[in-house]
Image 1 (cartoon, rainbow, N blue to C red):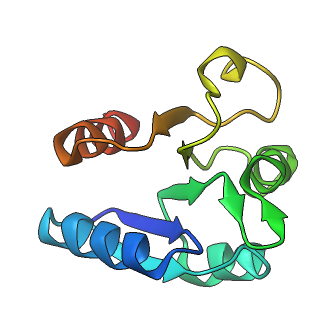
Image 2 (spheres, rainbow, N blue to C red; image 1 turned 135 degrees about the horizontal axis):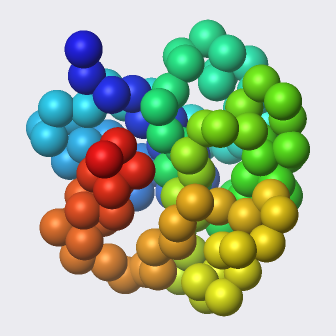
Image 3 (cartoon, one colour; image 1 turned 90 degrees about the vertical axis):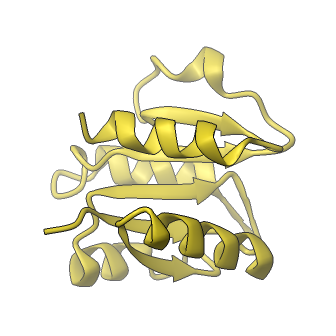
Length: 120
């Protein structure tokens, strides 16, 4: 059974590219353009990983990540945050922090290796 990845980004081009690349690599993906329904989507899709942009329209991916990590039902769900404007690598050890961080722009091989690390 393939691993499931929930991708959250308000840029439709990024969503499409990430969905295609991850699907071609063998992952099952679900793409969201916002984080407003993320807990419903996590419950329904049951992802093994959340790959989320930091800056979402009207929302902060860091706050969503913190909510995921502090919720008893989703706290073990790995989250990788992606950002072109924030460097979160120093805050990865804080409570509610993502499991990993990827800075934009990124090489696809680098992204795929970071995703694979979460499943090893």
